[in-house]
Length: 78
Image 1 (cartoon, rainbow, N blue to C red):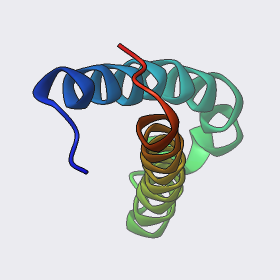
Image 2: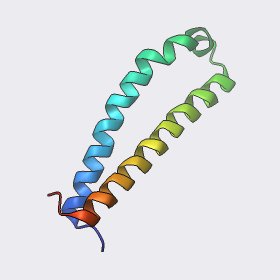
Image 3: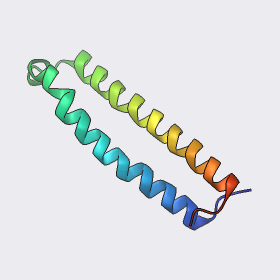
Image 4: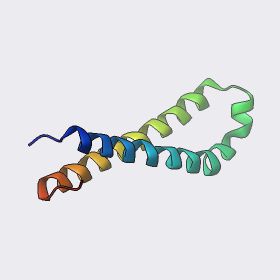
């Protein structure tokens, strides 16, 4: 079974909305450890920080995809 457009929209909003708050938490707790390197514009640190944010995003998206597939398979959630 495929998701309806409404179900896809709910999943997308949950994923993006939670991503905002997760990114804010990363900004508050992760970035302060690298202020010197950020100020120096270190390319290695820029790549590292980008990878951290990307990995967190992939894990979050994967988790939401699995959750909404499970919910869709068991019952209608909207």
